[in-house]
Image 1: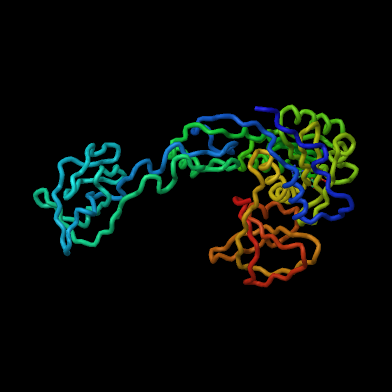
Image 2 (image 1 turned 60 degrees about the vertical axis):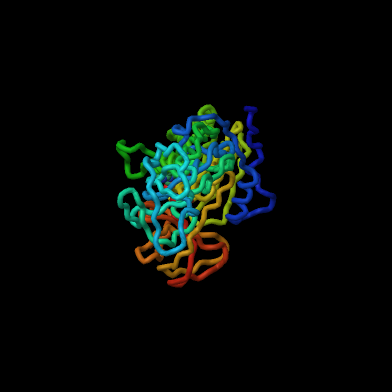
Length: 418
Ligand code: AMP
Ligand code: MG
């Protein structure tokens, strides 16, 4: 495998003169500049769950591999049937069962016992359900009216041998694994999982179980982001906490480069005195501070540190989670060979009303109600981490000013679909 091209150092450079970048422009920039940075490997299909196909997966055999019965019943040639309302066919000795074929051709004028999934013997093109027949002394009796090909599955009617079953870039979930195995695929070419580091920054951060003074807080972002990355199919790498000190943050970035393909940091990303992440990225790592017209959100500190893309997320957990979902997720997926994935919204009736001003796209913590409408969290305060657990997704309101009245259709994205 040739060396994959690294990201260029200026891949996060937005066009000059942009002040508040609309979300759509920020995403379009990422879409244009993120590309696969991980190698492919060949894996047994049973070890490939969650991986992304590096090459199209081609059907090695047809599905179904041969014409077979869709029901338990009796098979015959439609040409054996006579004019008139009732039919009587001689029942041949033997049967065709799944995995144990009849083994010879069925003469015209006869019928054969056949079970679901069994291959159609030569001479059989139609199957009648066992519920619709009577058998007395080796004569099969039933009413006319069956169509040619009834209750039969044709060879390859689902997928032809040689057809592309799944395209490169598709992630292998349960259904995809089932399909490929059905098509005779035993090995797949997949990308290595993207190793994504998670680094928290801040002198105020404590670990779970530690004692914390009132002016200290527990590092909620790191476990939240690590688990989210795992659920998205990346390989999370826990890089701990860096203190608010430029040399410490720099050392943490250098450590990350040796262990990760990409990095999510939280905290210290703005332009304040104690924002050492943006400080060091600016001094030594081609920082691009993206001021995106989004709520909730703060500046995103994007940079390439010795070839490793860094997504400097805000410290506030709600903003960190939301910006990870909206920006980091599609970018990381592209770095892992998945191409650019657009989340598909549902249009749901609002169970709330709200007015918003022009200028920022807003993401509201939201959840569906049993009647199919969607409600939003009572407070938009981005310090309220409880709203993330309360919600099962986000409602997206457009950049323009708008008034939502109860019953209006709004765009809703379940967390699982982002
Ligand atoms: P910063 O972006 O560093 O100014 O942090 C913004 C806010 O987010 C502050 O209230 C921080 O205490 C809080 N914060 C930063 N990092 C974390 C974290 N890992 N977990 C929870 N809260 C955090
Ligand atoms: Mg901080």
